[in-house]
Image (cartoon, rainbow, N blue to C red):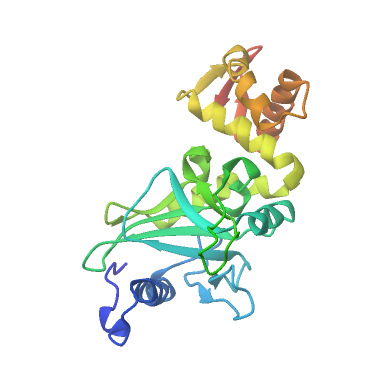
Length: 254
């Protein structure tokens, strides 16, 4: 994989954002493969779909690209808040590709967030634009990368080194069945998976998860039975192949 962007393609542009878009989109079209299937190419999306930059013609997975000069592991700026919530509820969010480039336009990091990891819990509402702004009152959002479980942050390039296709595709395949969970339920599933990952251990107990009861209650204030919901989601994560049950009340990450 050639990590160098073709800088000469942006010679007629002055806007930093336009240059980043042109160079990073060209690089993706030239170098990227589909992480969801065995296709070795992604193609540019149709013009009438502004939220999608690339598609796989083989498996029809959609991808959105965000290019960054400076890497923020906690959050990334996204578009309209209400539009994002509607997309999540309708299960229309694309897979997200976060690309970081160097001053010399070398791709340094490329992180894949599979589309099924977007829930309302990871969307942060921003302050409305002020009265002097061209779109006064408009409300944008941030994607809270820190709130996405480790399973939903798949590196494709790390510190200038591409990961093997087989590893990336294996990581995607491991979580792909989350897409079968309806969006109205999936938020709970992802929140429980996130707190499992916060334990930072392969094996854990149900009692350890109960320590997150208040945190989960804050995310889902309309649910009055948090502990039964935790147990329900652990069962679902087991059915999805992400957890394995051990002795009574104990679990293991697969």
